[in-house]
Image (cartoon, rainbow, N blue to C red; front, top):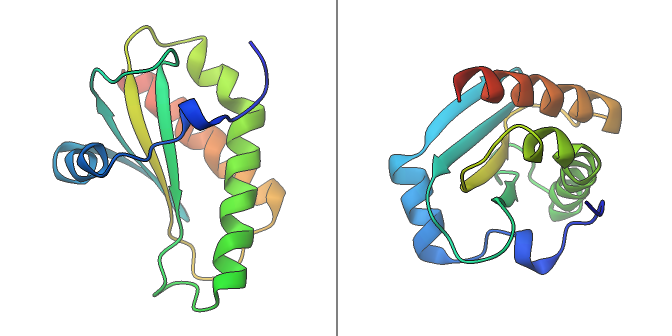
Length: 122
């Protein structure tokens, strides 16, 4: 498996995102939340993923975009941990919840915690 995060893997359809926020299950970790839903979607990849940093938490777009880049990079490097342990199709949304800006290593730690909690639940 290649360590990329291409167009096919990104969650973009409005209807899927609406379903995710209405019916999705949530896993919280200090500073980040994973909303996931087991659903059949088109595409070859088992997971479609999105990343969100709310405006009420980070006011400046520069800071929100930097955090989303860090989250995407961390997920991209560690997505094999999700892929190796699931067989169904899911949609994910990682939502940033921390009040201050976290470093890359702190974000990686949070995503790995969320990953282990997700695998325990499924």
